[in-house]
Image (cartoon, rainbow, N blue to C red; front, side):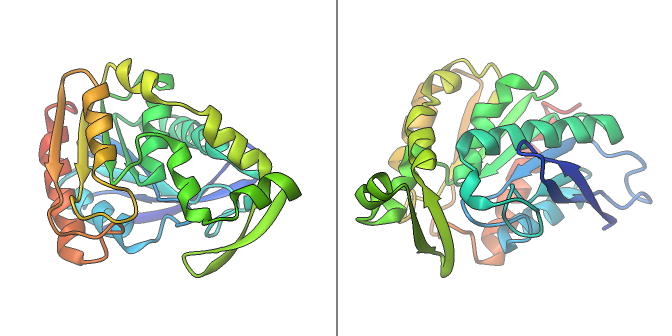
Length: 256
């Protein structure tokens, strides 16, 4: 499928690396709609699940923009200076780039903490008609559990170097303060967009109860799809491909 590397300025002024995947023009002269994909915490746009879901959507006629948040992947900037709020702002800027250069996104898709970010950003984007969360926490503060017993040390020292997913990251006090203040339950209740919640009942990183909290807080139209025995990162190809197939079919009624 055709793919284009692009860049745009993020919320902290850094250049963010993005990839725009579009369907084969011989099959789809124009994309059915454009989706904006937000990756998981400390991940990147090129993680296997994101790439496979984007591929699955483009095969079904959608365009997909995915990008690395500030300080991650191929994007510039310092991760330690970022927080949940800056991620939400990065998402809005990505949507603005898409609207300026192609067509505004009508679908937001977020994986893990990216799911919480799309729930927070949707209300700021008039073009968005449908929102999809995959293994998302009900609140951003959920990621605190990843810091083990070092939360108190972060608060006391101001910043601590941690190893997350096998890589070193510096977490600052401002990050903790931001995720605690960024309560999104009211935003979910006032979403006024179609919502699809996808979650594995055996997810041991973000428990299934988070999907319940999101689903109960949201108003209709809303749908839930179980990812059965998938892991949190959808590392098996068939799990990501299933997610793409469901998203494509579900989103079509909100895209035409």
